[in-house]
Image 1 (cartoon, rainbow, N blue to C red):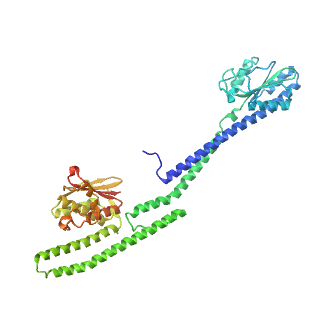
Image 2 (image 1 turned 45 degrees about the horizontal axis):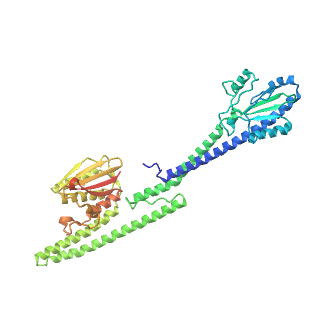
Image 3 (image 1 turned 135 degrees about the vertical axis):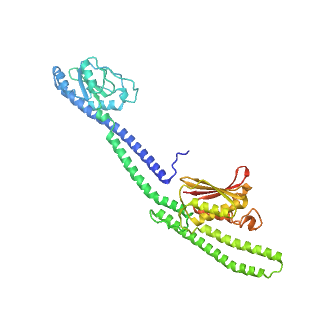
Length: 471
C-alpha cells in the first residue's frame, strides 16, 4: 500500500506543509543560534561593566567596611563575596572568546595592571560537560545553600549553571569574587516566539487549504464532466470559470462535446436515411419474387432479402444504442427483469432470477431493457435457458446472465463484441443473428458508465455475461 497522496489537492497541501515546516524550522534554528550568541555576549558585556563598577566602589572603601557593602551589593543574578586569597580553578585558555572579552573589558575599565581572573565552567563551553567547580572554602555553608535555593539547586554544591566566575584583586590585597548565572527568564525557551511561529504556520496552512481547494475545484468538475460524457453525450455544457488555464480546458472540453454530439447525430441520421431508402428496393424485390417460377431460387432470394433487412435494422439499432438519447430516470430493475422472464416463458423458454435489486437504478429504461433483452436472447439461443443473478451493493449493481451452452474459446470472448462478428460464418439469423446484439449491449452498458464482459463457466460449462453498472 502506497502512502503517496494521489489527488492534486492533497499533493499541493503536502508540498506547502513540507516547505512551511522546513522554513519555520530553519528560521527557529537561526533565531535560537543568534539569540544565544546575543545573550552570551550581551550579558557578558553588561556584567563586565557592572563588575568593574563594583570593584571601583569597593576600592574606595576601607577594608572593614567592604563586607557591609558586599551584603548590599550581593544581588542575583550577580553574587558577590570577599576573600583573602583567590580560589584556584582549572586553567583555561585565554583564547576562549568570552574569557578574553572579560579580560579586555575589565582591563579597559580598571587598568591593565589590575589582577583579574575569569573562569567559565566547561559545560558552558565546547569542552567536557562533566566538569563542575567547588565553592570557595571560606564561604559559609548557609550562604551557598541560600544561593543554591535561589538558583534552583538542592545542595550546597554550586553547579556549572553559572555563566562565569570573575575574581579581581582589590586595593589592599583582598579579592572580590563575582559569580553570575543567566536568569531563568532569559535561559528559558522563548515560548512566545514558538507560539507566534505556530500561529503563522496554522494561518498559512488554513489559507493554503482553502486556496488550493478553490483552485482545484474546477479541475474536479472537469474530471466529473469527462466521466459523465461517456454516459450522456447530450449533458449540459461545462461552466467556463476559474483561472485562465482552467477556463481554456473547459472551453476545449465543451467544443469537443459539441463536435462529438454532431458527429454521432450526423452518422445516425445518415444510417437512418440509408435504412429507410433500402426498404423501398427490398420491398420491390419481394414483390418481384412472386414472378420467379423456380421455387428453390425464390426461397434463397427471400432468405437473402430477410438478411438484408435484418442487417439494415440491426445497424440502425446499433447506432441508436450508441446515441442513448433517453433521459436518465429511476428504474425498477426487478420489474424489468420479471417482464423479460414473462416474455421468454410465453415463448416456451426458461428464465430464472436469483436475488433482487435493493433500490431503483438511475438509468435509461429502454436502452437497459434492450441490453438485457439481447443478453437473455443470446443465452436462450445458444444455451436453451437463461439464469439472471443479481448482486447489488452501495457502489455498483452487477447482473450475471448465464446459460448452459458450450461456452466460447478464450480468444473469442472479446472478439464477439465487434460489430457484425460471428463465430458461425453463415449469415443465417436462425443460427447466429446479425452479430450486433453484444455490441449494442456493451455500448449501452458503457453509456451508463458500466462494463460488459463474457466469462466461461466452471469447467467450460456455459457462458456468463457479466454486466456491471455503477450506482
